[in-house]
Length: 51
Image 1: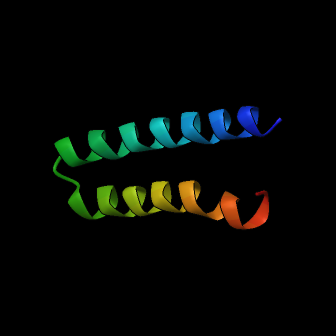
Image 2: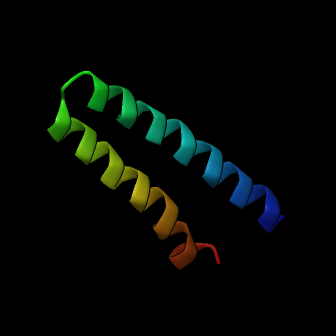
C-alpha cells in the first residue's frame, strides 16, 4: 500500500514540477518559484502525516 502512495505522490510532484518549468520558460519566475515550493511541500508533508 505504501508503494502506491509513494508512486502517486511522485506522479503528482512530477506533473507539478513540469508546470513550474513551463512557467519558468514563460518568464514568470516568481510564479515558477511558488510552484517549485509547492512541489517541495508535496514531497515532504506526506512523510509527516502518512508514514
